[in-house]
Image (cartoon, rainbow, N blue to C red):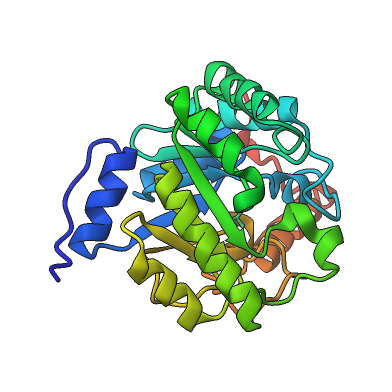
Length: 272
Ligand code: KIV
């Protein structure tokens, strides 16, 4: 299989399928605001996820459950204003799609109309099948999310690896196939054994994007603040840190404070 990289001016759901068939891995990162999205997009990341992890990262909540649809729309519209190339996928937050397919469609339409996002993502398998179909029927691309699904954290009880047991692995495989058949354009697999993730990716034609799911899938996603080392208290095995921004930023703030106290800042060139 060729892994030649094709240049895309704009990433669409079709580009992602093409990447999978060419064997080109898909890069995806989160962003919740204009400035970060501009840097992520400018760096050539294929997909920007306006994740409901904004609930943790931006608002300091313990879980993703509290973030609202209005707040997701605010984050997504800030991201959309920044991007020129990436496909922007927006999470449907907890409580905006679980009760019935009509509500799910209403929430997805609000995201598309009010933020300008390009696609939505929602968590779950056969429980959300009707909602997925309804949203797709309105012409809105849907990305699935299986494995560790943080919106169900109180059902699982922990953030440990999912689908290690045969029964759960079997359900995950069935759900993945169902989501592909329903028309999802891609699937996120979070924190599942690498062999299972590879098997799912190989059995589907749609791209499977992993987080803590090993290298056998079609792409990778990380939370940007984690890979930059800004959230230094979060240390899962799957996380590769590309910077130690926590230390860098702390140092910069300390230097600034010291310069202000010592009256080194501002100097003669830094004033009018
Ligand atoms: O909300 C999020 O950031 C996510 C990723 C972890 C996939 O869903």
